[in-house]
Image (cartoon, rainbow, N blue to C red; front, top):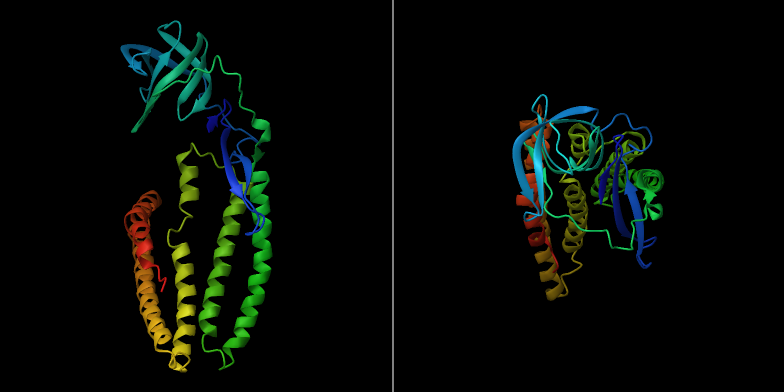
Length: 325
């Protein structure tokens, strides 16, 4: 559930199943993400804006509600208001709802915004549930503020992982000097990337913990979305596969599987599958890099194109790259 308050504060309520350990049963946790807007709301969603009545009307929810069109003086905002009376003009000074729809308080009464249009954005109410006779009431007290609980917990986890990964890198550097570990360089590259990914996650969590991120604000959403890399997990899997591939090839070359023809055939088939998987992953990574270069001066377009690429090319292909041999 999403709720925008009258002071620019935002509340996104959600539930999530979590485990303390992989072997533990899942437990349901209740969170509310505010983007830290609850700490110091800066401004009203609607700051004493004059709205002027037009002659146009529109029916909503299968004709159940008839609303009148109102527009702002600059004609940029078009609202269809439902209420008891419809004066020629109203001064709107507070709002409670989401994405322009919801309750509007004016100097001449309260209204329900059935439709909101600004620029290319147009939203309207499709259904209103009658809650008058329901005994149940939403209780927000069970929801923990996500930025002050889970984000803090995950930040500590990244700190713990940093220490562990640094120790692994020192160990891998020593192994690379030893000829008995021919795949040590592959393992080192994997742990370097794990360390880089951990640092990126730490930066994102610190931003969530400290910065004000209004998810109704396009610039704030873009700031978060531009940090997302659709190939991050792909690169991680590629580096892990390259390490596994190196181990398997070393075993085959040493004659480990030569005495068992069936196991040898399976090993060769897995090598071929893994090599194909690595090549496909590299192509995806290169394609995403090309999008970043192409739209280096337009972050919004870059995010949009990368999301399209993920839906069209990455998602459908992942199932075909499994090597369950």
